[in-house]
Length: 352
Ligand SMILES: [Zn+2]
Image 1 (cartoon, rainbow, N blue to C red):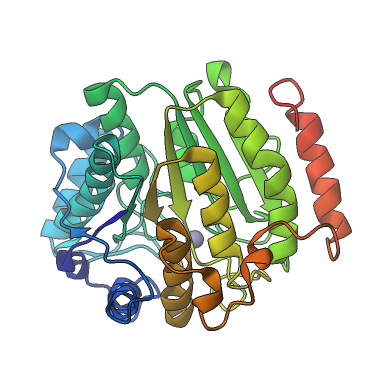
Image 2 (cartoon, rainbow, N blue to C red):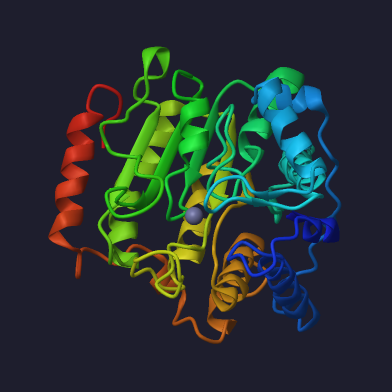
């Protein structure tokens, strides 16, 4: 496993905005601390390359890239009511997209997992619009790089950030070779107001946009209940060549920007699950705005992926059993209904 990270990500300078430098500096401090204590194996931390305009143009319009560049050069400010750019945001956003590309190269070259811990995040950025704290779609830039430069054909993406990755979804909405599975808070109750079950993709991409909009208050049991039923059958039927996990810690119950009931256990659970399914994958950091959650849950996720230390040794985790699906004990009936709706909607494409 490797981590792709640069201190230059701090140059996207947002002050007291929830998406600020402390998110990644706290995360990296926590990881280094655990390595020093011997709780996580030594993980190489590699520097990201930056991307060229050509890399960006595979995903974004020239006008969009030029708008971000000139807006930042002009001093930056608020692009919309919640997306803030500083003068160095353009170069930092290119480096964040580069982090996803570098992590992808590492996995192509034999790393089992590579985690791009970068900012600004990317999954709300569409082809021609910055929004939701995102400027360029880091994950999409990596997909198109792998496709065009290395001939990789089929991609599986699971995105568990609490917000629907509308940018990623839109970019690949007609694409039969990218299966995007997103589990997020019901868009009737949260930004960006999209991501319903019936948004299944279009044209050749129909059936390749799989949304799991969870009711507010959903717990780890609800999440694992529904993901256990969907992830593996979808991945097996689709047959991807390359896997991405879009990582968001804002679905945690302690996150200030959402209303979910997820606890720490979800993150190692999904890590272990996707490790089983994929064998190797690129992880890309999206949201998560509680610094303590970022510290704890990143360590737990990485620990499961490196497997150097048993789960029992992590102080506030119960035991390995708790990472496995624990049965339908306290499943919200709304979660069961939601699963049936997804099962029905996707019956032409997948057998769940
Ligand atoms: Zn989010």
